[in-house]
Length: 507
Ligand code: UN1
Image (cartoon, rainbow, N blue to C red; front, side):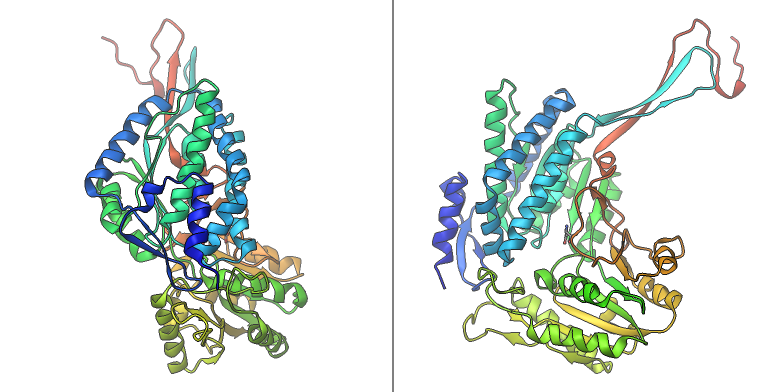
């Protein structure tokens, strides 16, 4: 195994991360081999308060910069991400344990959202609305909101930040970012790439206010300062439902906005008319890709009883043969879990499933000899009679619970019968079944797909889900509206004062 700490240092240096950021005492481990790769400087509570104050000052200046000009900064950020794609993608692979293709794919997702946000910077449209009064005009205007807090999770350590930051910046907001404690290095790399873009923006004649992007590496107490701070009107948080419940309540207590992207317990339904070759590939990537550590990972599969035996047998052999190992070797499709606690939770869920009669294929720890401090698992396929116990929870590991169904409406009802509502899919070539799944009587999730797995959404659509997933929407479509405040303006250009609703008030 190569020395990942040396490679990490040189990748960070190549992206201009200052050496003093690595002179701290917050340890960072690579899940690839479990060894320490760096120690970073953690923010202090005082530093967090100062950072938020700087971001507030930056917002007051940035909100006055015309939106298309703000888009120019994000365009430059996209260019710098293109230039740094290989290095940042590799760093993601080292810090999180993603395959090279998935590490690079995550950076591509950042580039894509930058492109989207640049276009958006000329399209932050409000409506003009007919008024009931003569010589009046009514319109709505979208204004910058303020400091945008971003709390991100380890599994998409850079893409989720960029979804929020690219939109927040073109919308005229500043950004304070608290990344996962498990991924401070990729966050430092993003901040350095942002500084490159900011320097080019400044060279083109417009200053970037200090504090436009503030990075706060640290633990929960730093996140709490962000969540409770009166100068932070919006926090976008990605992570567990437990985290989101706490964050959402604290934000609600001070009437701040929340964009919550929390747990998923995503399901797919395989109907008798499905193209089984395509379905097999779709299910395999969605359930085993990223070692089951996406919020969109496929966790439950409902297979029609007419095709169950044949399809599940094929799926089992895919589970038995998929290559598990160092994600830095191109040949491996399934990398490590993030840490020992994740392995522990996976084994607990499998034990609970067995106790309920579940029949488990795979799920065992692998590579313990080669990597005693890293946690590789063979993905687990668990045949269950019904939904109970761990099937109702999100376990952040590659476990797929497989169940039989006979009637599509029953399968849809079972799919919806969990607390989470992020992503869902149906595999079918029957138009009626596809449309039923997408209808008001169909999937209750924020994402509903046909003949595609549950994961791997593009940035152009709004991303997020219902129920315990938190209800927030990030990324494409009109998610930008969550980052701005709307004013309704009514203008009287006549010389009388007619009142709405025909009310008279003659003094
Ligand atoms: C996440 O796991 O938090 O749709 C985000 C997907 C990716 C994003 C996942 N585009 O799987």
